[in-house]
Structure formats: C-alpha cells, structure tokens
Length: 204
Image 1 (cartoon, rainbow, N blue to C red):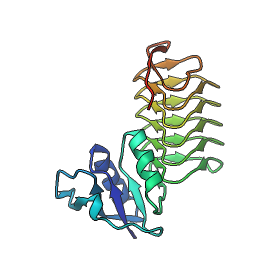
Image 2: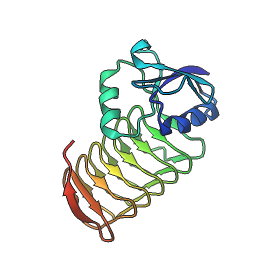
Image 3: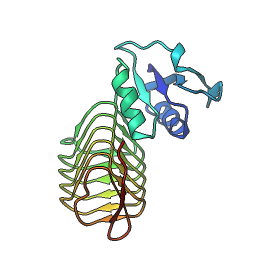
C-alpha cells in the first residue's frame, strides 16, 4: 500500500480517510491543512500545511469541498494526484478520467463520459453517457446528469438535482439542491427550482 497525504481537514476529509483505507491501495499517513484545528483525525496526524513537504512522486488527495479552493491548491502543488474510485462505484471502461478525481460509493460514470481534473462525484450520483464534466466541478449526492450534458469548470451541481439530456452548463455556475435543469445555464449563474431559474450571478 502507498503512503499518501490528504490536503484539507474539513468534513470531506473524513470520507477520504475511510475510502483510502478501504481501497487496499492507499494508506493515509498525514493530513495537512492551512488552518488546522485538531492534532489528528481518525487517528491520522494533522499538521499545518506550511510544515509539509511535497514532491512530484508524493501521492496527495485533496479533501477540499470548495471548488475554487480545490483548484487553487491543485494548481499550486507540484505533486502526484492519483484518482480515488470507491470499490462500490461503477466506472465504465470507455469513460475518460483526468487526475485527482474522487468517485464516492454508489456513483456511476457511464460510457464515453469525460471528467476533468480534480472532479468530485459524490455518493450515488450518476453521470450518463457522453457527458462532459469540467475541471474542479463537484457533482453532489444523488445527482442525475443525463446523456450529452456539458458542465463547465468549477460548477457545483447540488444534491438531488437533475440535468436533462444535452444541456450545457457554463463555468463556475451553481445548480441548487433539487433543481431540475431543462435549459442551458450561463457562466456564473446560480439556479434553483423545478424548472430551474436563474436567481443571481456570482463571479469567482
């Protein structure tokens, strides 16, 4: 098993510790955080990120739920970012995956889907055939993304939302929990409801 570092000591860190331990491939030996509040999490020591040393061969997993912060840290670190696929997730052989991707239990990545770098696909989310998910997007719990959907960089797809086939969603958008997206969504838009409506724009 490979010794690995987790960057980020928030709530998502707990899920990663358990997933890494159950992977039979990785062993979490250290957690680093910019503002650590605990000395250890689930028996893994926690230190300030300024004290950590990284190199290109060091496997690092980003436990950072905020998409902008995950992109910032991923771009800054010169490290090795393996993918972490839960043993209970399904990833079709023809799916294309970038680096630093996390696919949590029960998730499905369908045929010919494509995921960029540092994407999180949370529990029981489904990304259907030929969908394209941009770098640093987060597909939350129980999301259903239909075939041919395109989602831009940094977009958050909130829990339980549904995106209908061939919809295009721009970069750094927010799809509110439970939304049903029936038409294209522009960059930076925040949408809620069924059918989803734009309520405001938030630039990152």
